[in-house]
Image 1 (tube, rainbow, N blue to C red):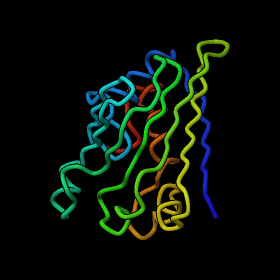
Image 2: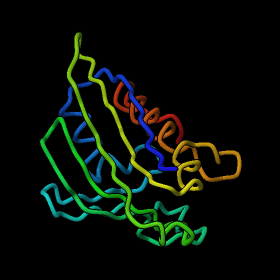
Image 3: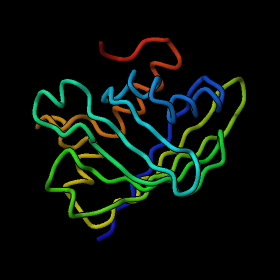
Length: 160
């Protein structure tokens, strides 16, 4: 059974500010799992998501996730491939498809929809949904997007 996860969050920020927070290492290192993401924002460009210092100290590889940019229309639309490298059990599953869609609404609020087409790998789907948080796997997309919203709206991430 193929799995697609869709998450939508409303953030009181401009599409450009959210776009920058998603696509620049200076921002991505400040929320979620605090790993800097590097993107060559052109079709065929490289995506590299680095592990944070704590993850590396616990034995994770420096490169936590990788992929390729498929489609880009700043600051409203980004499609990329995405492969989990932190857990060697997930590497053989290959690349998934990740889409970010931003839509400017009323009163300075932008909707951000993240669609992650995961495929048939149930363990990866559980991890990305945050279902394995109690086992130390983190809160997945719900955690990342909640932390992004908190950072952009208050200037402070949810945790130190």
